[in-house]
Image (cartoon, rainbow, N blue to C red; front, side, top):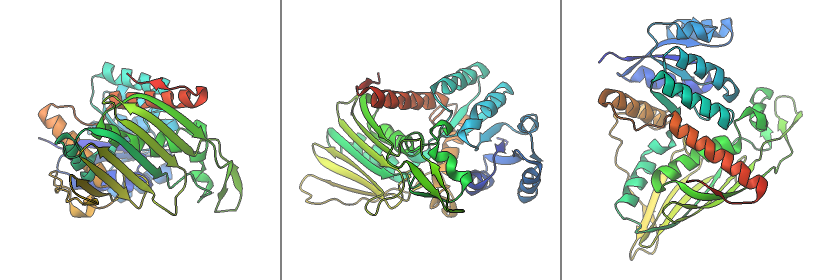
Length: 363
């Protein structure tokens, strides 16, 4: 099968460390074009990657060799760019969050169905080998009946300092990339992948820091997005759930996820709080075990090069590999816009619960 032609809108810091090397290393994909918002950066990216570079996304969409459009820019730009790509009949891989709010997500999912094209959303944390193995162990009865799960993490960003004004958008609730929508949802998706969806959820969103310091000039900017996210709920299985995400980093554990059952326990930990890029460790214990011990995780079957597998691009590479398999086999297994819509509905339920103090059903 001929490789799938990829065009990247926003080949900047994140895409240059993930999408570009993954596409370059995969026999199933080929980078065909890039697009930025400025001529100088478009020309620089074109020279760096050896493909056409455009300063207007519509020129990239008109490129006949582009089959899949990757949207790797700020969330507030997603709706315009993704809508245009879908209207052009292109497949779309959107970074998470898909959209700035539920209404936009609903419209993008509708447009994708109308266009009849495949979509992908960058919720790649579920493809970490440790998460995949934990799911297999739970399904195979390692912990018995799941009684409850607790997950505590740090967003790493959204702390007391930010490097530059250009990165300050994360602290603005209207920009759509917050401790809740980004860090917490990136962690919740693997939790639901392993254990199933919420039946009901109650939330408390707290604006702890009222300002943050911009390191480049020492100025302070206001914080309008909640940086302390607390959720409790019940899964459809009946298991209890407790999730807490903090902005910034902790001097203690930055990521710890326990799954507790009638017969055993599983624990996933990491030094970095963002599960989608973290190097995870998996421990477990059951039966007569008095303590949890390291669990050996099978090697990923996707043939990801070692230099990619151990870095931030690892789970992105696994997502691309699964998507390539879906296209070849006619299956639909990767996170798509329908799943993204469900996650945006969860965000709205969390915000509604925090505002009203009431539990929100999720069925």
